[in-house]
Length: 339
Image 1 (tube, rainbow, N blue to C red):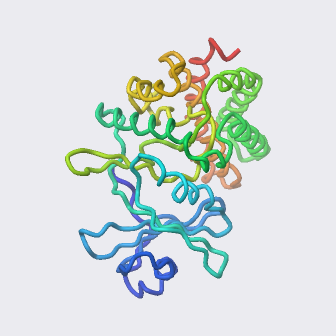
Image 2: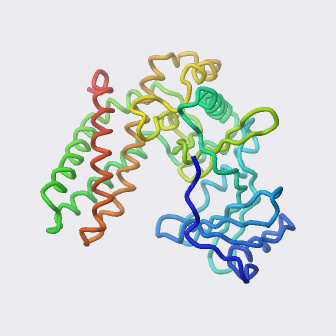
């Protein structure tokens, strides 16, 4: 599956583009970009993203993240202090610089457009081996434990923020009856889930804590050929953290409760270090990760609930309807132990 197209392209006066200037200032690579593509403009909570092309088919492009008011610390720590010490594949990290205008620029290799295919058994096994290696070997890297909390407290904060945003949105007179039904339904689920949060915490207490990617799904996992085989290259480490590794096992959108990695292969990897992680417990981890990732997605959609024009509320409320259905499925799967 290919990625989206850039939203803008600069192929003239390229040398004066801020991303090209930052690349020169970085000074880690003598190549000169001949084109700068804008893949995402600056947002309040997200950095802008550019892609530098060098006019050579044999020369890989470079993605550039421009942080202005946001912190690159998590990704920078992962690329500089953690991944180089782990036996896992990933994009080449070119470096990070701070410029005089309070901006920070982070440069990472473009590892192609082919996404992980959860329907391909070979790729599912490849992803499982990669995750198993990450989760077990990260215990040996001290910097990993310095990353933000990635266990229940993170996702409880997502729940609280989402509930506040939804309650605020429900005060808008422009909402339709159907809109209110969707939002009220999500609110009820959040309230129910918080009432069962101690059970989730107990389940997590029985699990190991380690480095987690946090958003390990096809759009953030690139696959490319290297030598005689395939390798995977996870990207976008901004949600990485230290905690229970359940979110990394959660299914991608539209896959129900089927993990996007081969759980038997994953178990064979992690049981060398954590022998208590049997298939039953790993199955629970998939459900917990599904709940946690849905809470994170709900909070992200809540950002768009702040609009006051009905047309701008269509997409976030449609997303809420989808998350409501998914959360119902995950809560039903957890009913036996989420008491």
